Image (tube, one colour):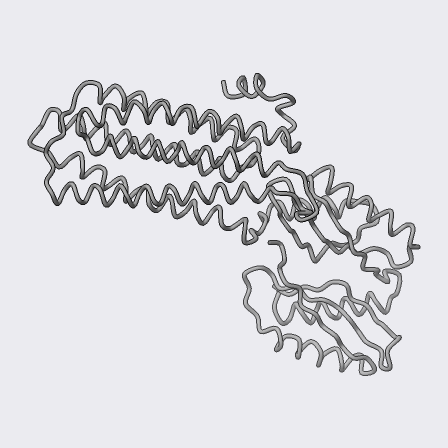
Length: 392
C-alpha cells in the first residue's frame, strides 16, 4: 500500500538519491502526518473534554505535538533540499537532522508534562472521569491509525534513510502504545468505578516509558550533527572494492565527512607502484573516485602513496618492520614505508595503525621500533607517524 502511494504522488519514486525525489518523499510523509494527527487531536480533545478524562486529553495533546512535529519535518525537508549556495557549499541536508532533534525534544517535553499532570491528578484525587462508549471507539481507531502511520513513516524513512522520519516512526509507535494502555485503563475504570486512580496512574507510567525513548532519539539525532562514524561493515566494503581496482596496492587514511544522508565526502590514501608515470597514477585516482561516486554515492578525493615494490631492500625492510610490530602487539600494523635520501641524514618514514579498541602506549611503541630499526639501519633517522581513526 505504501509503495502504491509513493508511485501515485512521487515521480521517479525509486531514484531516492535525487534530492528532489527525496524531498517529495519527506513532504508526502509530513503531509500525511499533519492530516492524521490533526484529525486524531480533534476527536480526542472533544471526547476528553466531554468525559473529563485526563488521560484522553493528554493523549490528544500528544497528537497536537505530533501535528507540530510534522510541520517542522515538512519545513526541514523543504529547506534540506535546497541546492548548495555561496554560504553553504555542501548543501542544506543537515537541517533534516535539526528537524529530527526538534521532534525528539517535543517528545521529551510531552512526556514530562504528562508526568506532572498525572502526578497532580493522583495527589488531588480527581474522580470526575465519566467514561463512555465513545472513549473506546476513539482510542481503538487511534491505535490502528497510529500503527499504520508508524509503518508509513518506517517505509519511507528506510527508502530515503531519514533520521527525522525514523524518529517520527518511533513517536507514532509510542503513541499507539500509550493509547492502548489508556484504552485498557478506561475499560477497567468503566467496569470498576472505585478504581478512580487508574486513569492518572496509567498516564504516569506511560510518561516514564516514553521519556527514555525521547532521550534516545535526542542522542540519535545529535550524533550525525557532531560527526557520526560510518558502520564498520560499510567501511570494509568500500575498502575491499577499492583494492579490487587495477593498480591499487593498498588503502588507508580513510576520512569520511557527512553533510547529510546523501552528502558524503571521503578523502583516502591509496598505494600504487612508484614506477608508474604521473598520467598512469592519475588514471588510477580517477578510477577510484568514479567507483566511490557510482557504487556508493560518495565524492572522493584520492592521495597517492608510491611504493618501491621492485626493490629487494624495500621488501626486506617491510618484512623486518612487520616482525617488529608482531612481536610487540599483533594489533599493530603499518603502511606507506619509504626511504628518503634528500635530507642531510637519510630517513625512513612509515605510518603505524592500531586496531580499533586496542589501548597501546604510542610513545613507548615508537621508542622500541626506532631502537630496533636504528640497530639494523644506523645511517637513517626513523620517523614514525600514527594514524588516527578519522572515519567519523
